[in-house]
Image 1 (tube, helix red, strand yellow):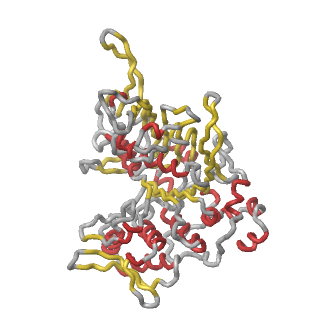
Image 2 (cartoon, helix red, strand yellow):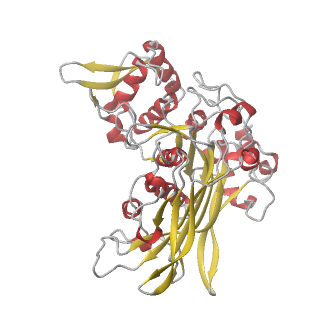
Length: 512
């Protein structure tokens, strides 16, 4: 679970410090940096398993016809920075399995990872399709003292959640960086060395020369030598950006298809079929009809004429097809369902699948959803995220949801302490004027810590969200039939007294 992310020098994220809770909504106009924040998370996730160059090529590059590493670095006017730095605080799972199938146990589960990269001009003898190279300047993975956990996790988790999510302790780092002096050809030279400490055994730390590393040291974490690094690696690799494609969601699944939904929504049918047949982890056979009924009830919050839902098993073609029956008796396969229905359905299946953990990033969740049905979508997204009042367990995995939007209907419905507003502000580098992203929050929420890095959103920035030309009504804002978590709903943005003063008279009537 990603709880804080500091970014310097990545795209228009020149100097950003963002805190995340179980559910976070980033609102802002097009082109202000919402997607760049997701790109930064995607980049860190890729670095947990891939090489530096492969991770860079997986991220959108700025305004280039072909991928170019330079496009990932911040630019202030004509000045392009040549360094970027990330610092991530996270809560990781207590155990993880390495590439050889061996399980490792973390010494502590609340960690801080830092990574600094610099751009190196292309070598004439070593060409690259990305137009240059990335070099590690600094890498570290350090523990956060357990006594500081509540202070660091500002969203104020409950005691049960905190005691089960934050376990273990450590007094030494797991990855560290130092500069040492060596002699080459009779000359003394400084070089940067990254240490991978052996917390899984009594062996000596392994040393790596930073300049020659093709990938992060964290990506080499194993159960036998560095189980805590392995757990951090698996946590970061689990951060994913969903790009649910209707074409993928409509596809039937083969009998041998994977049993977990892909980032584009593929394998929806096989995942639901597996959940109905066997509960994850336990191997217990559930009530198959009850599983389908729960998904159907959740889907009925989007449109009320759902009678039943199931997976049709075609033995002859060895295909699994998602089927839906409406109250009028019509039976529809997945290929006949609307885009919005399929997106909502796939998220309902993800909510039920307790195997999933980590951060789920989703752009514009309102796509394909009628404004009056947005409250149902927000409830579903909140239920996907971990319930911080109960213990972390099989039915309540360590999972969070981060969405971005420019929809007034979404902004008015999210909890006020879950909202971040993205905007572009001026920045200066050597008297050159440029632009950078800033993420601000509402006052009097857990994000408002009174520090200089705490940016309060100006109420004028919310006018376009609180007074849109058309506002959704609250006529169907009812308690979900199949909500997976029975928890108190926090106040929404539109319920705040200080913001209701900004509503136009006719808008107040629609919200009352």
